[in-house]
Amino acid sequence: MRKLLLFVASVFGVPVLLSAQYNLGRQATPEQIQAANITVMTDGTGLPVGHGNAVAGEPVFKARCAVCHGPKGEGRKGEYPALVGGRGTLATPKPMKTVGSYWPYATTVWDHINRAMPFNTPHILPPNEVYAVTAFILHLNGIISRDEQLTEKTLPKVVMPNRNGFVIDTRPDIKARR
Image 1 (cartoon, rainbow, N blue to C red):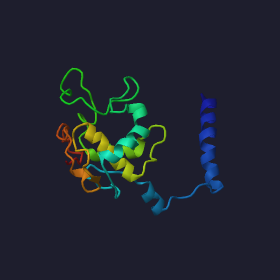
Image 2 (cartoon, rainbow, N blue to C red):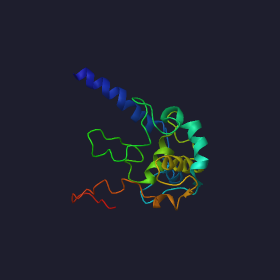
Image 3 (cartoon, rainbow, N blue to C red):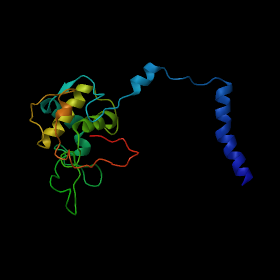
Image 4 (cartoon, helix red, strand yellow):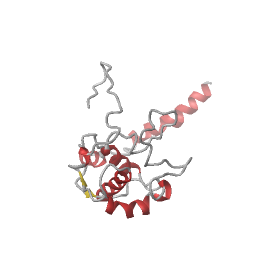
């Protein structure tokens, strides 16, 4: 056991000591930290300036998203989730959790696409394409019209079908608000 502890200490401890000794790395500047802060809140705080609608989003979706999620957002069973459908299924024995049935905020859809999609090359879509793909997915779910323009101002105003389907955590140590 002692040999194992010495081994672990040498593998994980020495690099830390050496980095201080040899002045490796540097502290991130406030500008670098700000550039990495891509958090988008449910009220739209953090959304960048941009715009897009389902008309502009359809070709981007077909080129970047349909390979996994299908041309109409139906998904590939067992591999990639459906983005469309499922309304009215959440209280059934087989709920279908999709953007149209489960997600409570359109801003969260935008944030997920921006951070994590396309799956094989995440965070490569410029803001206008993220707005457009978000609009296309919302349109496929019947939430917005095909030509409705989403922007940093209008996206937070989109009311999702399951907006009130989540409950506030009322524990006294949690500062939750809606």
